[in-house]
Length: 400
Image (cartoon, rainbow, N blue to C red; front, side):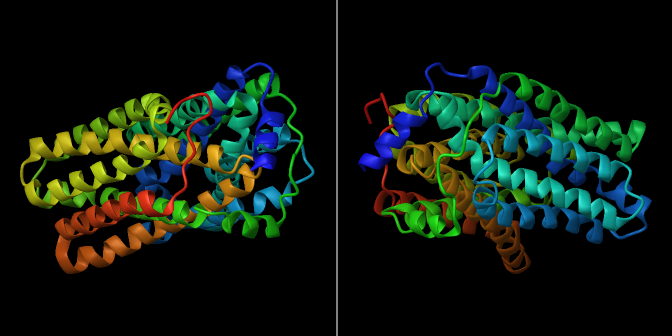
């Protein structure tokens, strides 16, 4: 306990480095935009490379798998390197990745580019919470994380529709060239504003096991897996549900997804305020609300207008999730936040794969309504796990 407090005090900056936080938010926007682009450009990419859409789609899976492994290994692999240079290296990797994809003459080169992106994404998310803790005071960590994660929300709104639109105008390769611009700007900004951050911990693989054995850590990771599995089971099969059960048109579906993205951004933006008021209650009530929304979708999904409202509320609630659990890490594992972040990244990537795969099995048996029911059950179970298996400390400087 004393070592955790001492570590937190040692890492707290004399002055909050808000410009550095915003530069990381821009970098996140570049990373997530690059991650989401293939979803809207898969058909022309596959045609250009002479492969099926299914084969081209495996580049997305490869990115997620590499991100999982990188999240666990990045801290021990870079334990002697200034964190400033490691973070900027992730921006460089995204630029190189986008250019490799843009000029890829074959699927193998494109896959190499996507693997680089996986390293950058996994590495950044593993270090994001620890970095926020070193740039601002403990009381400001939720706000800093909300700024960083806002890059995800904005990318969620604009990446797929803008990628599809620009792809039809200038071709998919030029879209990936443009995708390198945000990370290029972020790199220049980070070079200017990121302070030196020498590594503070050993970051060995043994450290991961020690962190995992801490009271409440396994419960927190299990709750995270339940939440992200439930979310991605829901989100992966949302469009088929809206088409078959809701009988929604393509235009209506586009508006519903836009509503999700906007509401998600709003949720992320106000997450810091809610988390500072009561961290445990927010962590528990958010998955509960998402579970109820999923069950309502399963029961009343034939009403397209209601679907739009429920999906927007889901987007708002999910906007609180990444910030909430990153804040939990920041308050629970202050002395080994990078290693804990690696475990969290691995858990989330595992949950994404499990949610999509498990949702597919349920979809084949019971359709999209069955997927939403299963999603609701997982999310309500996550709420129970928060209350019985997760240790929560109040955000520093606030009463819980």
